[in-house]
Length: 102
Image (cartoon, rainbow, N blue to C red; front, side, top):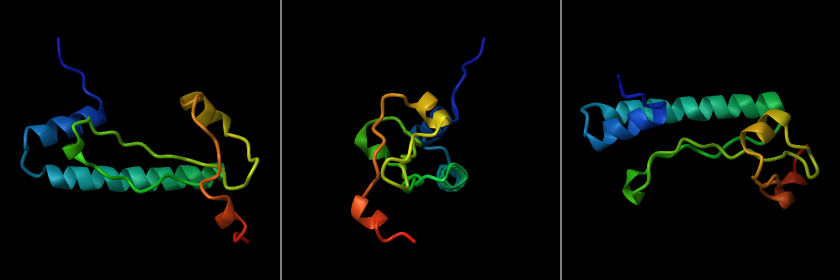
């Protein structure tokens, strides 16, 4: 039998065990997270995730999460995102800034 870890759990374990070189993996993971989130947002024509950060000092496990939001007021939730997180709010980040969009 073996221990099965998610990618996030591996990052936490590497950090918690003070594995040499872990900082590179954390930077790379955050960079990939941001690139994927931005590409997905562009693909779905919505606002993408905020910047990825890893803060082990708050006593919680690492969570590589990206918050997505509508680009326009009243824009429906893409079905694929609704399936992933059906209970979340779906509101523009800042309605005033949307008025400035071309």
